[in-house]
Length: 182
Image 1 (cartoon, rainbow, N blue to C red):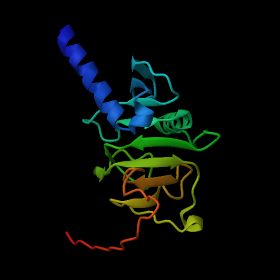
Image 2 (tube, helix red, strand yellow):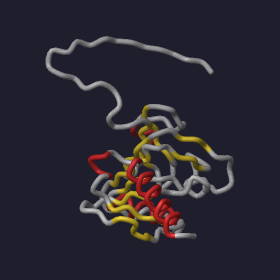
Image 3 (tube, helix red, strand yellow):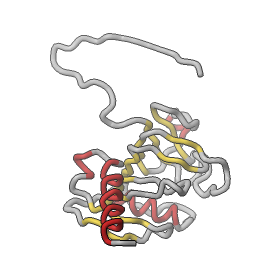
């Protein structure tokens, strides 16, 4: 591969990785390729504690994402198929470009048909779906408990944390509701 092509691939990986998280995080994050064992190859150093990875669109489960330090521990534990995550406080992972993965119920499933998942972010700390009163079915918006009943259960929030309109003093509420069928 010539230098121009290699440079172009590197630039595209950095662009894709930075788009996976909010600009307030990803602009100063380290960008790195991550292999299936969680090893990192830095493409561009950063100045905050976050790491954004470009993923691989050709591999189900290898999504682009931005991870905080506890999110990185959680993800590496998952990739290593450890019986439970070892993060000692909640972690965050953004996947604002969406993802494809094999299951939203079994963290180690590698053979089921791919499930498309829209833009989302995850709060990585043990969540009990029944105790929290939160569903366990993949949604195109809202919140669910992914991998419910496993040590990798976590809060999965579909959409961006910046979706919706911001309230400003003096705004009035306009209540709307819509349903759509396929």
